[in-house]
Amino acid sequence: MTNEYKLQVEEKLISQKQEVKESIKQIFKQLLVYLGIFMGIVIGFSIVAEVLRILPLDFVTEELVRNITDAGNIFGSAIAILVFYKKQKIAFLPTVKTHRQTLSLKQVAIIIILLLGCQFVFNQVANVFEVALNVIGFSAKKEVELATVGHHSSMYFLYAAFMGPLVEELVMRGGIAYRLQKYGKVFSIIFSAIVFGFFHMNFVQGVFAFLVGIILAYIAIEYSFGWAVFFHILNNFGFNLILGTFMTSMVGEAQAETISLTIMSIAAVASVILLGMYRKEIVQYVQENRTAKGTYKVAFSSVLGGVFFIICIIVALLGLQPL
Image (spheres, rainbow, N blue to C red):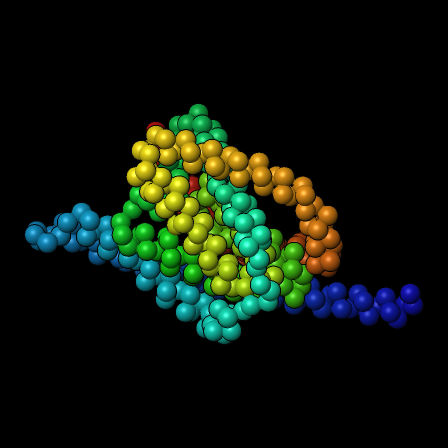
């Protein structure tokens, strides 16, 4: 390797790092704008709901107040994603129509097993985290409830089951993973999954979201955006409907919980087996799609990124409840 060639390689790496740095800066900048718009609208709707609560109006019920409060999530995410895409100069339709490979039934089954395995991990992390918090006088039960779609108003149900998955995929996969994949698919998958975890501003759900985020980012990059949205909805709503509501109506709540835990436990074991079976393919994929050395350091040294992560941690801490 000649000195001239080495110099060209070094200059290319430096140029790429600068490009990554600028891309990450813009992503975090717009994420902060997104959070500002979303949280501002949510707070606005909450204020309106509380004002209605204290007014002597016959038609104002507790259900109406909850629906108005939770409607802020729908309107907030809708407006925030429009601004996010406009500022990032992302084309909406091409993103939604992104399609590369076709998923086989076998691959769909594997993904479902992996997602159910993640559900098992979520339950175990929630239990361990709750015990640890109880020791110091706090609880995360409210955070765990916020991670489900069965304990809220109809508006929150619509948001968590459908609107949320679509908007989150538009942000995390369409706005982050797709944008960064030119620097390495593995980097874009891991980075978007980490941001996805923090984005939930919920300690328990964050771990779960990170694991699921890896799966969804891989699906979006290798297969299609539509499949990523489908599996996101299935993960948020489908499993809850099948293993929760439907199962409870069939056999009762106690037995439904036992059956659901058994299914998720089997899926967790199957997930470990599948990852072992496909370890060579996974290693090969990582080697073929790895990023340049130093890319992660550049990505996570962003000042705006630090602000984003700190805000997410603070909101998560505020969500903990004293015993």
